[in-house]
Image (cartoon, rainbow, N blue to C red):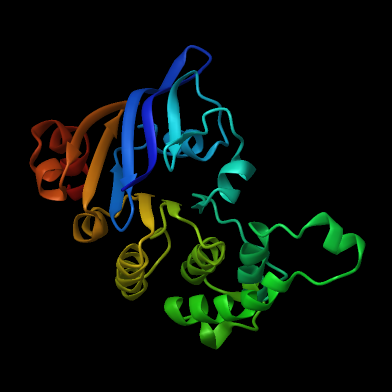
Length: 252
């Protein structure tokens, strides 16, 4: 089932075309990846899909509903989670509290309960959700540490954990392997597969070609804002245009 779809997405900044007529689809239980050289338009595409950047033309569908005119907060409440290329964590909060923020962010407490001073009954499940995600990501040993004391690699996992605690139906990850060691990348690979196997649709932008080829079910290759190729990892890796524009350079 298609959870998130971008159709004919185009975005310009002044006279520069960042993304031109790009279409992608993300399916429940599967991992899709976007690859390409720096400046290919990958992060702009993500911003258009999440609602952080308005389109010049094109359509974004979430669970079949047109959300093109909806903002990022509305899309998040509808089940779209994301991480960022630049780390976005609360350094002074503990790891567990960072994840708790993610659990609370997509939960709305009815106004009348707040006015009466009544607790949100759904909040009781947040702590259990945080515990499960900490275990999934191997962060149990640092649950009470302030996030700012962690390495970049582990902070990437904290950010991923916060997104997962929002129980997204579709998860967009912008360079999740950046700063990770080889062992942490292997762990991330297992996490991404586990998340997809749980029915979540996953879309990632990633420069680690080995990770993409190992974990992705479908790959989109961009260059200069345009779609070069799409298909299985093997099909895209064998495409001469993709090899010339990107893969041969990353392996040189």
